[in-house]
Length: 201
Image (tube, rainbow, N blue to C red; front, side):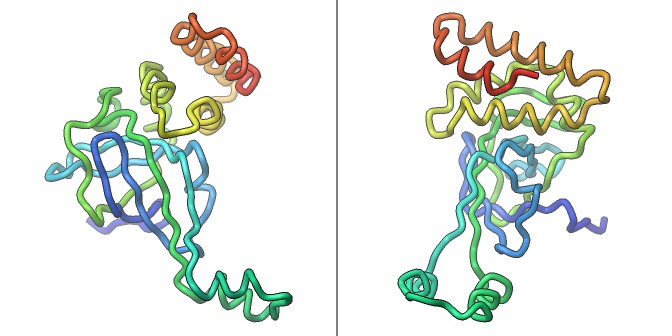
């Protein structure tokens, strides 16, 4: 089967069951790489099952030339354009795993195995996001992930997910999501208030 390239996020650099980092070229950056985006990648030795994850960090790496240009008092605009458009500036995208499985048959837990190095990471389709977010159990994984900015990530993923819903379902989805967060943070009213202020319709 011929693979489409317009939904590719990058290729896996390193991975664990908790999450992974993938890499791409700076010229490939787009809305698909946004903070809170839903992505998928085949788990190791099983092309029929995907790890579902959330983008929680995007890092543009530097090199010696970039360091020198930063220190220069003035930089020719042509040099800047060449640096941004023609040189191979690596970008690293960090992903938190929140589930695995196949379309309409997802399990909201860490996958049994991580993806293999160089596996292609793709953006989840709107249909996949819609069916995955019918269940809000994955909020627990996000809120308990110490390595990610979880409060902001919850708000960002909801802004992404709501676009997969028909417009008449937007309000209900956001209210239901707020209630699900509230159930998980009943003992932390300060944190709950901060998150609800970020996701209020």
